[in-house]
Amino acid sequence: DRSMPVKRDTSEIWGAIGSGHGFTSIDELSRAMNISPATIYNYINNETLPSPIKIGGRRLFVNAKLEQYLAELTEEGAS
Image (cartoon, rainbow, N blue to C red):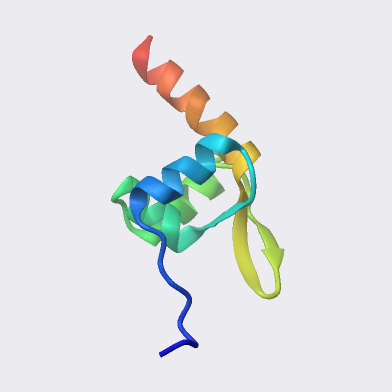
């Protein structure tokens, strides 16, 4: 069935985020982080994650911003 987009696997998602290029969906991020989409929305609301932008009705994270936030999270967790 060609109408379904091929789902990226978690290594591809992390690679895209790490590159700082392109976009990541809430569904992809929840799979990559192994947390529920509801938790992603909670993280957006409490500003743990950046606000996604809307493109064609889909909410997508800008990977450059996402990478920045996740880097800060891991630094805080490490210290």
